[in-house]
Length: 171
Picture 1 (cartoon, one colour):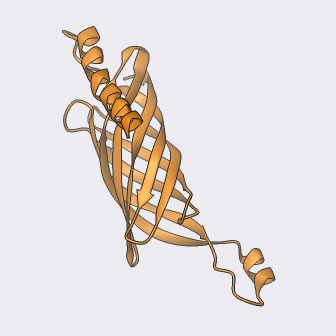
Picture 2 (tube, one colour):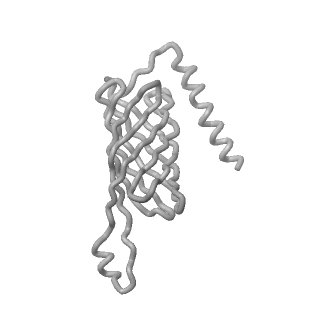
């Protein structure tokens, strides 16, 4: 339990050091932002570790398009791709919403192992809503929490984690 508390204290201290270094300067956004996510996914029946990456192209001061890829292990064993609109209403806050899909292995039926192997994975549509906060560090780096809710037919999955990213290409 102590490593978790130490990790949370470190995350909470990062914004303070970033504010001290950048005080007096107005934050400018980057046109491109790449980030990597480490975290987890949970619904009422399953839990799994989640890792992934996203790319945002910001075409206006507060609006961008975000493409996300995630792999969810554990009980889920699936890959997810989402294409969301991103809105930045205040400082490092980012709110997202948009469609996507996930791929999960088909269930193996007794006596039909070869058919399941040929069929591969099953695709399911989803709608993602979420948000996060990017604390801006020196040299274009960012770090912060990220949360999302994936709404699928008959299932809602809560995704959470820490995003570590890099912004480039000033507008």
